[in-house]
Length: 303
Image (tube, rainbow, N blue to C red):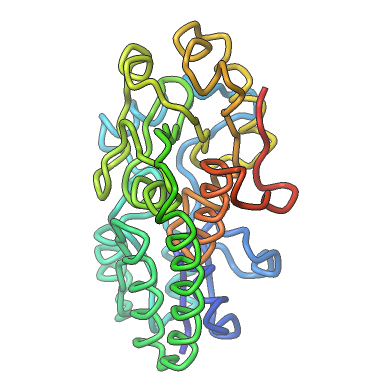
């Protein structure tokens, strides 16, 4: 079987199932595990983001492209035709994250390719595990799928049972700095499992922009800054700048040293196996007196 993955989380699922030899092509954003770098790239960003771009300018550029119905990613149809994949892993959850599966289906019809398109669109953490099992099923990797799913569920249960009797902490999961975006989809569920109470984000709903007034009124006891698509160093840099916003600096979390920056790209933005690592990071950020600190490179208190 020849597989093309158009999103990083699906690529991580393919590797977790031991199917990397069947992976024929990936997206431009697929960077984990490191050995994926040798795979042909079949999708590329249509929007150019310079190293000097700010969160505000990135948000403006994305909004402008979406308002004009311009694609944010372009599929290399010639390469897909050459690879002739049996299975393409895509998504319809977020136009900003990857090529939508509907666009993929249209492209396949144009180039005369009969690949099966499997759309992975989880709304919650356990939906992600369900997607792992779905990929395992369509690739005849049921045993591997059961093993991976069982391991992830066991780790989730370990966190849940450890937080069950703890006093919940009011948490703000912040997905973007300017404008501020509260996290949605699977993140509020993860906050709850980690012993927190998400103050603004809604489980299974999209992330949304918020005002600093809303955030101030929510009075979070802890803030987890997880900028979508950015690693830890960028999160620390952007997160430190949040303290220049008066409403943020006045939050209980900011006054009491309970603001943590995390590698959002690796452990929170991508609905793949490493979300469970993200859950363990959240548990520590929410109850640092109970959970051990994550390995270096995953999270850091700020400022």
